[in-house]
Structure formats: C-alpha cells, structure tokens
Image 1 (tube, rainbow, N blue to C red):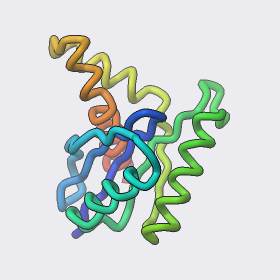
Image 2: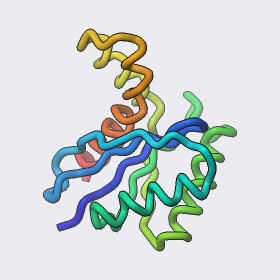
Image 3: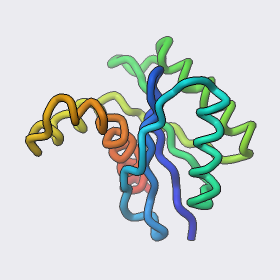
Length: 136
C-alpha cells in the first residue's frame, strides 16, 4: 500500500496532507511557506521520500462557472513541474469550496483568526485529499 499526498497550492503557502496506508483518511501534515521554487521542491522531495509517495492530489482552483482562470493556470504549471521533476502521478481535484469548508470547520471549532491563518491551507489540503479518497 502507498500513501497519497494532497496539496493546496497558493502563491504564499502550500498546504500539505497525507493519506494513511489504507488510503481511507487524510491528515494534515504541514504548511510550506513559499520562498522560491528551489525551496518548494526541496521540501516536497523530503515529504515524497518520507511518505514514499507515488501519487499527488492537487487542488485545482476553478471559477464558479467551472472554467480555469489565472490562479488555476499557475497551479497546473506548478503541478506539471512536480510531475516532471519527481516522475510522479498528479491528479487534479476541483477545490472551489475547500477553503470555505476549512474556514467554517475552524470557526465552528472556535479557533482564533490568527491560528486559522496558520492552519487553513493544511486543513484545505486535507479536505482536497479526503474528497479524492472518498471518490475512488
């Protein structure tokens, strides 16, 4: 069995989640602070190696009408670089409402605004990966 990595890719951060070995549940792992592609890829490589990742689920931000806008194009370009660099399968999942859902669950959990900002991307990555795990 293998684990699957889930990514919520943004301009400033990358939320990261990983599945359990049975691919039933997703757990938030970390948030990568983006400081340059070299650092981004180094941190991703460490996670890929640590968890023996063969597949990555990437949240694809779409416009509400289903089209792909500028942010979606950035995510696709970044994911293609991951795919080429690490020879790893990339799966895209529509992430339109994941950040909203993550924000809602954190508010309901009475997490302060400051703490929400620190974990929102990791929680969104968990939602993205869990959605994928539940759909296969």
